Length: 243
Image 1 (tube, rainbow, N blue to C red):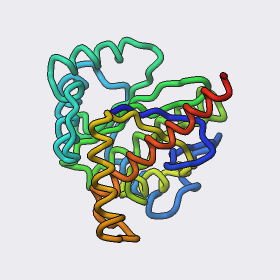
Image 2 (cartoon, rainbow, N blue to C red):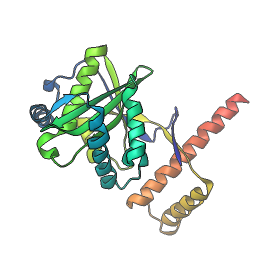
Image 3 (cartoon, rainbow, N blue to C red):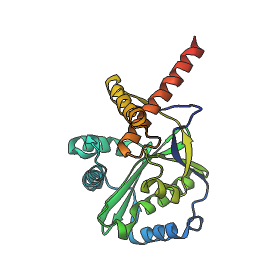
C-alpha cells in the first residue's frame, strides 16, 4: 500500500502547518511556554556529530518503533541506518539539530526545504529523561527560530494527522502553534487487500447495522478504503479531462 497526497475538493485529513515570522516564547500558552523554558534550561541544542546520530540516534529510533509497534528497518537496522543517516548528514539540503542532556543526545530533528516550504522529516526523542528535558519542545522552538533567522517569514509542515480525531502528538503540534489545515490523502491498495476491506466494512455497516464505528481497526480500514476511492475518483476525473 502506498500513500499519495492529492489536490482534491474533498478533504479527508489534516496537515499541520506553521506560517510565521515570529516564534517568541510570549506567543505560546503558559503551559507550553513553561515546557519550552524547561527544555532550553536543561538541554543544549546544536548540529549533532555524525557519531551521535549513528549511536544515540539508532537507540532513539528503536525506542520509537517499539513504542508505536511499527516496522522501520531503515531507522532501526544498524547497517541501513548507518548508510542512510551518513548520506543525509552530508546533504546540505537537510538541516539537522540535536538536543543534548548531560552530554548525551536525547533527541534530534531534521528538516528540508521543498518549493519554499520546510518539512520536518524526522523528529524523535529519548523517552528516558523526557519529563525532565522535554527535548522536542526545545528542538522545535530552536529550529523554527533558526529558520526565521535564515528566511524571515517561514512556512513549515509538521506532517499529517493520524486516523484518530486528535492524538497526543496532534495536540503537541497544535500547542507548538502548528495549525491543522485540511488536506487530501489517497491510497494505492492491493486489490486482494481491498476485497478484505470491503468485507469488513460490509460486515460492520450492513450486517451489524452500526451507524457509528468505534473500533480503531475498523475505523482505520474505512479511512484506507475512503482514501482509495478518493484517489480513484481524482484519477478518473483527470483521464476524462485528458480525453
